Amino acid sequence: MDPLGPNPQPIDTRATPVASSNTVTRVAGQQAPHVHHIWLVTGPAGCGKSTVAQYLSESLNLPYLEGDEFHPRANIDKMANGIPLTDADRWDWLTLLREESLKKLASGADGVVLTCSALKRKYRDVIRVAPYFSHNVSLHFIYLHAPEAVLLERVGLRQGHYMGANMVRSQFEILEPPTAEETDVISIDVSGPIPGVLEVALIQAKIKMGAGV
Ligand SMILES: Nc1ncnc2c1ncn2[C@@H]1O[C@H](COP(=O)(O)OP(=O)(O)OP(=O)(O)O)[C@@H](O)[C@H]1O
Ligand SMILES: O=C(O)[C@H](O)[C@@H](O)[C@H](O)[C@H](O)CO
Image (cartoon, rainbow, N blue to C red; front, side, top):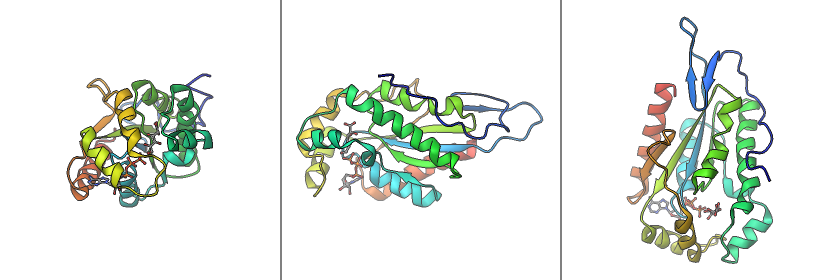
């Protein structure tokens, strides 16, 4: 299976003369193109992806795609039975998330917020294809991190979710925290209470939007 999948639906690129992945550049004298931001909230189970994404979606008035809802039934059944997903289980899910995000933009949304664990570098790279063909799209990862013990406690307290606390270890075993060269990543320490985390996430997003990157 090709993890990069088929070409995404192109977004309107007419106003964008030159661009490369995640960098929207401008020819001198031309008006800056309108940038459509994809905010991808990432991190291991229980880090607060849904909590943060919901808030950003409401605050920025953008549609919200919950990544967990795009897993095939077989993946949900695996996780519910305490079996970690493999790379093979994740490729189609990752390309689907990328395509669904671009579809939202193509259908008129100004931007989109989505959740996806994106635990490994190569998973993030699958999503990074999105702005490659859609040059007025800017992709940002919002990586939420906290010590394993903190997330274990949060997942343990959570009721009625298929992902049990027994799965947290497996998430950390394969986690590849973003490196400094992954300059499209905003890292947020989510050890503290929710209001502070939400405030930081929104401020960071607004800084990026203000900078037009
Ligand atoms: N900063 C925080 N402090 C305390 N509790 C939090 C914090 N962020 C989220 N929570 C709680 O932790 C639990 C997990 O949060 P949430 O569902 O948003 O995480 P998630 O990353 O989307 O999880 P999953 O990947 O398993 O779906 C929820 O009960 C949520 O209310
Ligand atoms: O890549 C994965 O292993 C999965 O996406 C998980 O991260 C869960 O879907 C999510 O955390 C819900 O608890």
